[in-house]
Length: 248
Image (tube, rainbow, N blue to C red; front, side, top):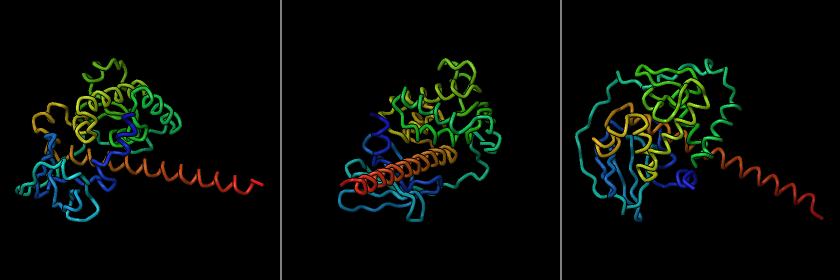
């Protein structure tokens, strides 16, 4: 199942954060054509670790065979005036939609499109902070920030209706993942900046907003997956301990 592939994929490490790698000094080209900027990299035992920032905690681990080349490039400054498209509002404004209702909607959409519910929740968090009435400066609407034209193409009649918005956003993300062969980073970049921009730059566009968005969603997704796996492991341990105590 794709959701398992995304959650377990080694292509994007747990430590990726929401820091945009626009100040990077290396350009990494993968054999599938995907490119990314980074601060530096190291090689060890057939693996390449791509560091997205000068520190040691923001990195992506790749198999060495995945990397076609790494070249030096001039540093490019981050535009401090850049803003996220969604401009997420205060979470208090989303009080009309309960977390339980949102979780149920995400679970249904995830099951329908074979997408990890934690991935969908991470996209919603980055796009609208869970506010079904969110509107971006570009005109994107609702929980998953659908542009009117995109919403119409997906059969969404009312982007401010939470279930319709989530169904449409999930269908669109499903389409993008199919288009990019389940490459989560490219799918998220296209969700934020459009498939045309990904095609133009043969990878994640060099927009600070888009790079920050991709890193933010992946970081949140991995955080949620780790929390879920930890909770499941502890539940199994409690059950095992309880069974041992009651066994003769």
